[in-house]
Length: 342
Image (cartoon, rainbow, N blue to C red):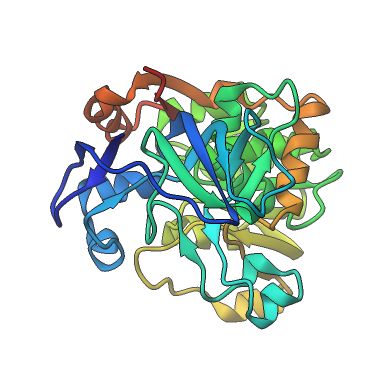
């Protein structure tokens, strides 16, 4: 089959012929229809410090996908050939305390699809049946292909109740932009998002942001004043990993405010802990998706009218992957889809 492979410990990817993956008695084999390019894939493509420390070449990368089941292991009874599915990108051990208690998203021995095990940027992928999500009828295939990052957005946005609350989001990448729509759909009063990328702030406006603030030209405090907020934001969603963004968020939270932090900093962040204590703030780290409560929530949100499709801005055939990655690097895109149909 054709696949995009991190062949060598260097920048770039190779389009190669590799063996079609085998599948065991508890696995399913999926013909990939389309895939989404993730920020993680871009890290691997440019071969930054994180990628050098994490990725074991040669490796088929990619973890956001939708496809159709074409073969089943003999123990698989919950799925059938022809089902339209995506896959949870974290393959857990199944035997640790958290896995045995049903808290699989806390498994400390997780293997990452397209990171530490073969991924989805290929014509076929094999996954354990416990990692398969069967899409409800009518789910748009483009949206289905990005359930993985959509799940990150849902997990983060719904970590704390947002009904009737004022929400601040720092970082207008695709996940932050999707979180705007999720928070509004879940009943937030105001949703303010910050970034320095005008294109992505424009996407946030399309997804329903009350205010999209370019912090090079304005401030969160000014946004508060414009909206008439007296005490700060109730809920913060930190999506950027930027030290200044986190500190700006902390400075603009109300007493007792709650922050869900998905952004991964590339360096240590110093914060004023006395401010955190005296204002009784909560910061909770968020990673991945709840297995599989978040997946259920994603489906129900879409069925109840949530529309995240504007976040998908570009489509390329997989043979044009270099062009797709260069568009993503330039920052003038939302989610980019690679088409794996012939």
